[in-house]
Length: 117
Image (cartoon, rainbow, N blue to C red; front, top):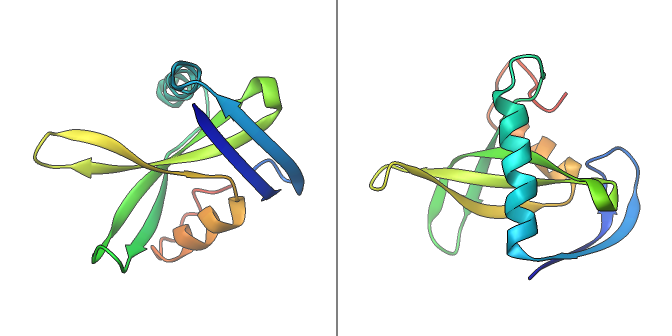
């Protein structure tokens, strides 16, 4: 089961107190829908590049955030992925509930285009 709690879930614009619990299967289905929307040329969705720094594991790099709409809870979450060159796969690394955290990590990249809008 995935269980996330946030006192500042601001990805969807407002500051809301939410607790979400769902099975891995349901989360996988929501993620699959978000990926399908990402690949839809009529939909204006993009992956958001962010800078990730993990001092404990001496890791830093760019990861990509997919915004996933959790319809039954009327909220969005961000799932970050990093590319593993050895397996040629993207691996999920974190779940973000705070839009501000995604935006600040995105600004560290220093791109002219703001992928968060």
